[in-house]
Length: 607
View 1: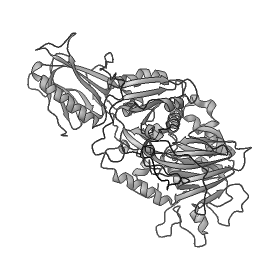
View 2 (view 1 turned 45 degrees about the vertical axis):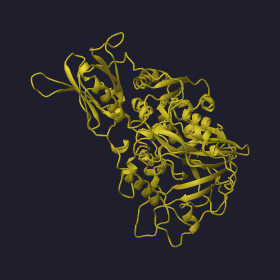
View 3 (view 1 turned 180 degrees about the vertical axis):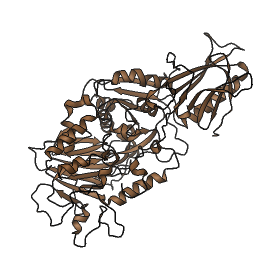
View 4 (view 1 turned 90 degrees about the vertical axis):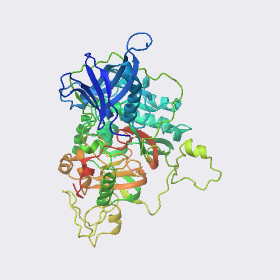
């Protein structure tokens, strides 16, 4: 489609002549002068922020021949003269008149601007909006009614709003809903996303259900998904999160089956699995929810004071453990995607200049009211795999030679049953029980890894000594007998705004990023806080990093470490086994990917 459409002459709200023009991916509303002076720009709106256009009757009753028609234009704009604060964006409703002589081209103009603004994405979506009224600081209900709903309604969305009343209520809803929504939006923290995904994944038609994307609205105390989608600065950007519901592209993500033994209880994880310090800083700060995500920093500081060892036996099916190689691959992937604009480019996607217009939220467009199943979402022009059916799931314990496979079940049926994993000799074992004797190899207790290209890499970015045992190299330089401060397995780069724990995590790559943090002097962990938001701890030698396809963990001290967490939810445990289901679930993202971090934008090999 051409970047320039025909101009549309209109009569403005002040009864003066105007012109609506679209050029360079933005809508300009111009006021024309009668004395030959250049037109005055009243509104400039990026098409990403444009929501809705509709031609209606100018006065009450039915349209009459020869009468002017009203053209309603809805967009997101800033009430600030600078237009630079995207958190201040609100619905802007502009009403102009179209004269009869221009009505034929008005319909074509409307269709053109809507096509260009939505780029083939479905308009007027049917949205299931789940609200946790007591999550975080307890402001979700007012945020939804004051900010979210006006934006959705102005875009012509049909919203089914439901408030949760008890724990796992969202999971119950997701298990039983009809699959006739275009998106499930969650106004809460990460907990509601966890519940919805587990509800969808437990269904008999789980693979089909999980193709319905989820779009989070950050109103909880833990909002890691929003940090990964919008970046640290825009984590709590409600207008941006709402625009994502309307115009977000599907982003395939992996899920993990977490099988608890001996009960054989299975839960699904989309974000993290944690042991040790990371459990204490999360569950141990529940009483500090009023602090927002600051509570996690308080918990971290308390944890490094105690500095206790998490006694466990971990077995990992490692795919890669070379830090330099992993970071290079993640950065190369970003370079390949540079052809399109990303939220990580440092440009505010919601910047819009607004002058001389009042914000009017009294009228709404005609929202979609049909209760029928919506038509299938159209693929975006040039879109590749973001709309494709998820890959068939093959568990490491699953028999893949089963004859007479039901294709519909393979495509739309349940997720295969999880069975206990059986690690073999190719898996590595990390033991922190203290029962194994330490190697004579000495490890530096301070500093980060430094690249030396002239030396042979040992897989962690440091030079491998000729005397260094191969097994230690293969374990990412882990030495049996070392203490574990925490074990953290994740599926997205950020776990909180102030901690990018897995900076080389790639959405939908079928792998889990695992960090095993050694017990080190308290001052070293305290110093590691600086730069944690930017992923700089990745290069610490004491932070062992692996990409794995599956792992098992055994509790060696049940009395003193009775719980672990799945996506921030606490569970008692003896053992648990984890495996990946590649690209089976979906989020919405304005650019079809996670936010591009500074870590991945750097061209050098080391931070």
